[in-house]
Amino acid sequence: MSLAVIHSRALAALQAPPVTVEVHLANGLPSFTLVGLADTEVKEARERVRAALINSGLDFPHNKRITVNLAPADLPKETGRFDLPIALGILAAQGQIPAAALDGYEFAGELSLAGDLRAVRGALAMSLALRRQGAARAMVLPLDSAREASLVEGTTVYGARHLLDVVQSLLPPRAGEPPPHGWVRVCERPQAQAVAGPDLREVKGQAGPKRALEIAAAGGHSVLMVGPPGTGKSMLAQRFAGLLPALDTEAALESAAVLSLVGAFDPARWGQRVLRAPHHSASPVALAGGGSPPRPGEISLAHQGVLFLDELPEFPRAALEVLREPLETGQITIARAAHHVEFPARFQLIAAMNPCPCGYLGSRVRACRCSPEAVARYQGRLSGPLLDRIDIQVEVNSVPHEELLRLPEGEPSAAVAERVARARQRQLARQGCTNAQLQGAQLDAHCGLHDDAQRFLQAAASRLDWSARSLHRVLKIARSIADLAGADLLAMAHVAEAIQLRRVLVAS
View (cartoon, rainbow, N blue to C red):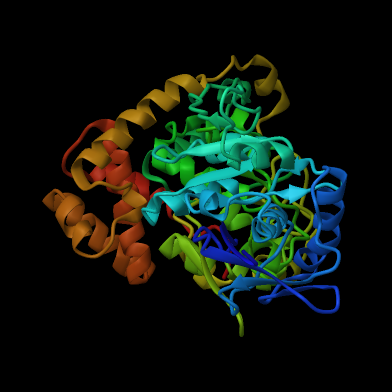
């Protein structure tokens, strides 16, 4: 048979669409042609496949015209993941392995010149897409990639170290001989393990910011901390992930699948909240994602975790503006002329900034040397629409040295995390989502107010000239405060604390 068909998958966000690898051998001038909108990395597979087959002791059709088609033709293909399917297609087209044995599998893997299989990125996304599409095929991947892909329950995954392992598993067993050494079934089911990270008890003082972070963790709210240098903003942010509840299986899979797209997933960190902290020189593409084909940016890599932006006004304004839609919708769409993909971006934003260029506006330690115009320009780097989308805005003031030395250690993260977990359970049982995700009619249904609290909130909204978004966000924060207190209705104390946490601390 001179034609062979092998199944594989490309990478396009988390969709991982199926790709059919068609290999045809024909008489004529010897050539090796690869078509189907292949990237340079894919086209280089011709040399890797040729060397891998020869060095593995397998026949390569030097005197044939080889045509490889990656279908569909309008889907971009990248990386060396198609090396293994192409090599198997050549062998099947020559009759060295039975073509019918390939039907029940999907193959992906990069080949070395010696025939060894190297891991490919996006294995978890491929396995997740295979399960969601209900395909009945098993996956054959390099061993390291197979361990990653097997985290998805309901899929059958085999791992191999060498091209010959795959070939031997596809050949029919000979009578009277033991089965050859081939690929192995991989079934990784790790349990989320608690990792000892930075503890909130190490931050002395700062009761107000700690309370704000507890409320943010309970309701899934975003936070902006404003204060002079050295007051503990970064310390607080680095300990925030330790306050969040553990990820459930589906959320852990989504987080790991996005990280897998860029090869950043570590199985040892399965089920743990990720903390992404890009430098303030990050470009809009680095935050939002992009490229050709599009890859996820920092806001997607922080999916189901924490995105920490330190020195917030120092980020390029165009980069900060890309946060606006994901903060509302929990996803981002990368639209290009030839590509259109969606990445999840349900992250919690923790941002920190100085109040002025020198950093000491309002400080009790050092006098500010900035002019009012310089302060206004610095704070004006943050747009009003972006600030309106940040739920909690809190001041972090310096603690006097004499008090800092006398203060005992604070409350440990574990104790705060227990209260946060109870509040999250109340929310999920009541509405099926966190308070930060409440929209429209859900707000009316789940944010009931006492009469005095409603009058107080209306008066505050009128006096402060809030937008509708600000009013709704105060309601969501108050709902989280009430959940921490175990209350069903929002009382005046809950609303008053929410208003204090919603104060706009910087000029827009």
